[in-house]
Length: 237
Image 1: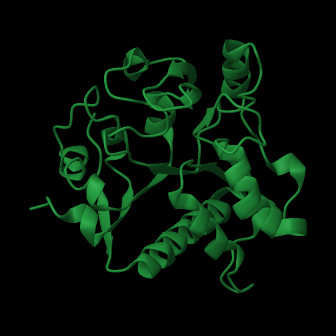
Image 2 (image 1 turned 180 degrees about the horizontal axis):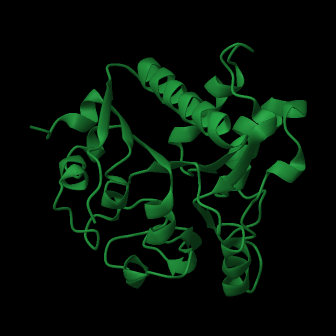
């Protein structure tokens, strides 16, 4: 499959990284709303997005997206209760949903029920929410090249039909529910957030046009906008 070249945006400081990420996310959300009247936004987990969420909630009314037209989804979730410290939903609730307050309604938030004992059913239920393509998908990249909860060497990387999967990852907590490659491939816009020297070795591999998805799953997002800091680009030519 041929894809358009990725767009690399390099930040020179931690503050600029947050600002550039917020600017690109806001632009992508507004573009989707202009086209269809709404935006299906898939959030990323991990520690990086929290500061960006905070920045987004503090934008002036003239720069802020119309949050009432945004549907919030998740690229993956750990199989823990929604109030657990490892929950992606909890991070988003504390850094984005709660600060937005009355600007959004609970009905706009579609979380993964990772705490359900029947993980396969929870994954299947979430797949029903993902039948419509995601307008803006936010993703991160681990030092091992993983994205969402798609880790190197997993069987799910060959999935062509199912939209979600239950996976046992190498990092705690191990059980997770994740979107599959078809969801990422169908996303209308992708924004990848990657910072730190620990990402320097894998970044050139993820951006390589001949990337092996089995080895570097984040290569699935190669066509997207990549917001990175200077440390992460140390190995780029």
